[in-house]
Image (cartoon, protein in one colour):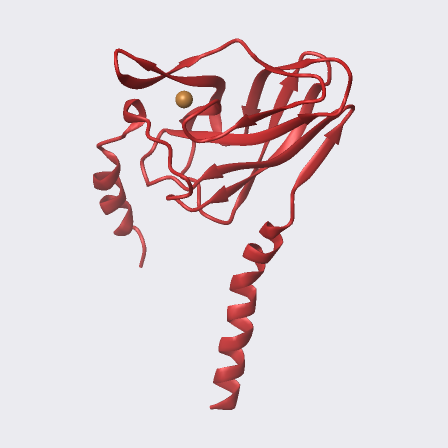
Length: 177
Ligand SMILES: [Cu+2]
């Protein structure tokens, strides 16, 4: 009985560990830029798109510009901005976003984001995946995205809703033994 209880306690600790590690700020420094906590959200099975978010602080005296992105988990990664068009929220690809000198740029749900299209596999909560962000002056910087829960500050993006997802998911469940 004690042994079982102890195993259960140890398992609980292991399960909690990623959450604890996640509490630390994940910062990559590159020149005068600090890339803070790149993250994404878990996706339902069958989803072909996901979004990436991050905060970039510019400690320098010159502005910089985020001009492209890439990630191993998708065929493409574009920079998107979200706006209202005819009263409907929509998003579009942009060539870049300024990171003001002495200021910061935040990609977040409902705002600027990296759009991963042609997703190669679903993203699971707690995992990480590598990618890169390229800046006009600071160059290409390797980053690691942390995948958070599906509901994490969910943006409203009607254009990306995938009605096929629940059906695909149901099919995938049968592949387990
Ligand atoms: Cu988008």
